[in-house]
Image 1: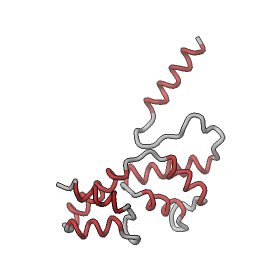
Image 2 (image 1 turned 180 degrees about the vertical axis):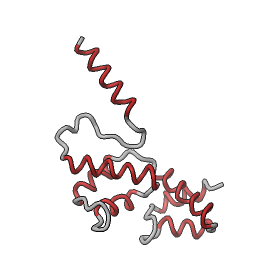
Image 3 (image 1 turned 30 degrees about the horizontal axis):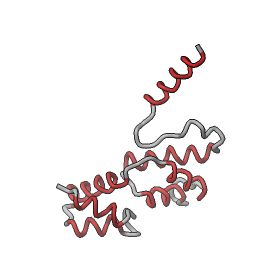
Image 4 (image 1 turned 135 degrees about the vertical axis):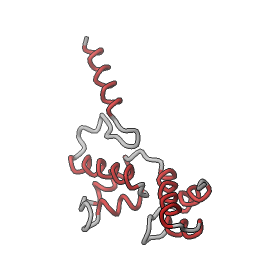
Length: 130
């Protein structure tokens, strides 16, 4: 009976978990601040399609979430996300709403004042624009 209950609980947990990021079951000793940073990071990825560096900067910003560097690092290290897909989503938005050229989009994606994607992520986005 106990193993059946455990299996049911695991199934319910898995089905309720979003596909991009999740808090690992065995991380019961993780501080609440770290878990909160991970949830916030997931929101930035899912809704705003941000880069890893962009998420980290937003989490630690005095004008943003104000998490500690340690909590933000935990969040970006434990966030399960396809940054290539995020770069592509951002590139599509620039193409559709701002009518930017591929070269200008790539510059924006990698800019330290822009999206802060890696060169590889930005190139993936440009290569996959329609």
